[in-house]
Length: 631
Image 1: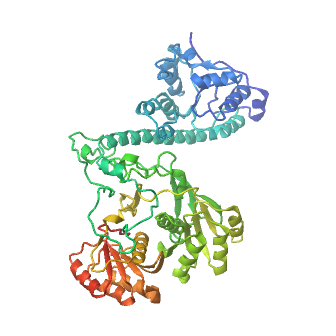
Image 2 (image 1 turned 90 degrees about the horizontal axis):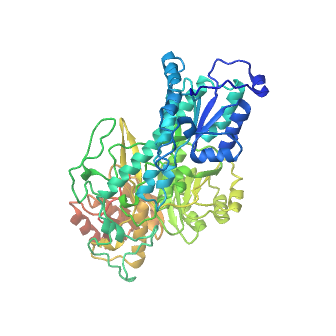
Image 3 (image 1 turned 45 degrees about the horizontal axis):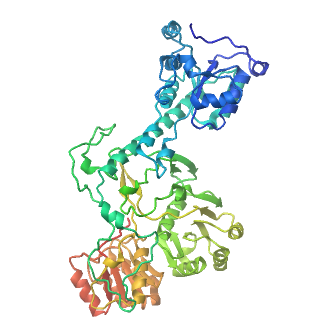
């Protein structure tokens, strides 16, 4: 029997809203959803207000029927049962023909009538939760595969393609606006709305396919993992470890070569070669051998959701916006077995700066975001309570202390002038003692970010109505994520930096060993120096920076700036250099100011010349063997 649209009477409600419409009226809707939020109310409104026939599948059909909604099952429509454990439900001409038939072509309508295909005017579908499934730590490969939706994307794409006549809804948030439009247009939707909904569908299916592609690629990359798995498995260092230079408190012994416990480094190629190729890039067609598989996929897709339009960029004449990674599609995340240190806990996307909750203050600016990111990255390097103050991406002060308030006081004292108008980060919950210390110093703070803030502290901060306060909810370890920077015509990608090297592999290369106090100060300085723009020279007393020279094209000038800022505090202090010293002049400047110990990567062809100057000044020098440039 031919399945055609029935002539359905309109209720008085609909007649009162609009008497006529030139848009296609919704008479039959196919509903099949994984996210069932709001679906019962939506379906009931379609049926009660507009006499829409509801066709549904599986669990959705059961839920609607249980709610008293009259439902026609999909197998009643097609004449075929759902089969193969639900893999085959809607892949049928009576479904897709009913959606795809062009209403303006008599040939399409004639074929639909010939084969008993009744038209479907609305498709309400959302997809299996694939991203949530593969995010589970115990998910199996088979479980992930079964959560790849086939029928859902096909239905959505068919309806979106034929949006000239079909209304497609994939987001429960659109239910109310669709119902409102139906009420305003006698049971029809406008073309403008159908176009908008179709665009939403293609965004959703694109992101869905990308989640599957990314996961599949990661599985293949894991199988061909080019990291040293044995070394990664043995790297059990906890987040924010307590550094040590030696087991001896009196005369720390830093000599030694890299141990088996040293974190592995990322190699350009895996240990095992293969002649197989990756799937080619769908855009340029380029392929690569499996020997190159790993962190950097040949086809890297960034899915971003606009969080807010900013007042402007770095300058008022530059438009700007802030985007977050789409949920479940964080391109910065690496699978655990592809991380340089697989023993570290998986980063929690909810604790990222981009997901932080702004509790008060003016809207964040472009420059605020940059400074907050720099401060948040720096403070997470430390396990002790720490405060970092940043101005124009440059640390004004970094300090660790027994309490956050003491850490703030020490960080502020590093450079009170530059701290004015700065951005701050803490790696401990913010309490009233910190707020009171800020008020006592009269410091103007642009923004601050913390893992948590006490309610009493937030109440005090509310006096500063413009102060932007962000709460992340937790702290992720540094490193083990991808970061991107744009250049004209492309993007650079790299694994983010982190001070994770084993301090037991550091080597004392001077005649004098550092004292225990110097050793601990050197480790603090080394960790803090990583967050300073190159060329970077940092001077520290204990766990407090006292002089920072950065961003200079030569290391000598950075040393002079650090010494000038430190003043008398340089006497008896230690210093760190983010890269090797190419000449002895920088060390001589530090030694002349009273600095007694230096930590640096080493590796210059003039290391001997630098060490001769160090020995002449009775300065202890430690080589780390690893640099931390920051451009």
